[in-house]
Image 1 (cartoon, rainbow, N blue to C red):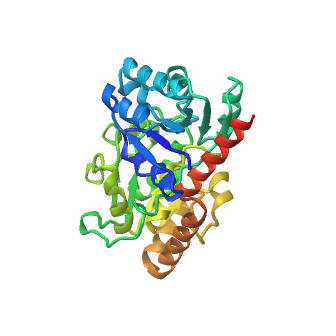
Image 2: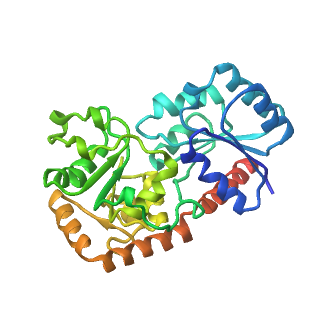
Image 3: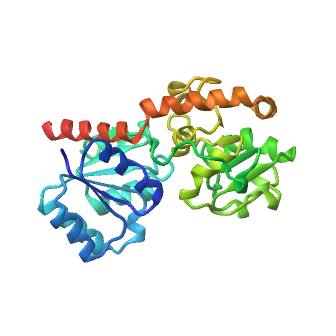
Length: 324
């Protein structure tokens, strides 16, 4: 079995793919911080076959330590795959910078439309969605701390230039304006651009940042979870995580959502603000229907969209580009 070095700091990542590789019986070393000694442990001592990097790490760590990591990996001929999880919104500011810094052997991206951009660099490239980790994203007893009718976990936009703006106006705006029992967690909502977005969020709905480790408790405690989407042709990580938790997800019917999930079977989709209000009213009253859909969604993502499946996709991808 391949030995996997996974470099990421955030629990959003370390509680994901590494578990998938472990379930495939691959030895895994999770490298969360860079120092000379940690790099030696991770590369020289662990001797991985594949190294996976992701995110904005080039801004978090010194260039000296990143160069040390990549040079040692290259010395031992470790296959280096960069997982571009910020595409397409931050392809130039994040993904391209990371490629320049890390010099990976191959790229996988959450955005199918970005694959050819990397192939134009002469790099093997493929598509890899986020997924769920059934060891973390799972059913658990509800917490009174997170007992709300509707919740949203996700960061507010800076300029709101992506489809995320439409998602907010379809899913969140009509509920805020009607004063539903809503809680919102994430960065930048305290600087919400009311003039640009066309509505105001009362301060009592804003709960600040939430540690990733707490997200599963929220999904198990609230009755309806709003799932913003950033683009028509990709899916957010929370899409899979909410469903994996057994939570009831209300999202928008993008082509990526409707390709993988059946409306009102695995989740529910609102195409307009009026849809959102109607669906929320219906599912708040019909607990059994809500729970059945949530159960179906959980069963599907456990079967087809777990990080075990994503890990298998990476191994198959690496085998393919090694042959070529």
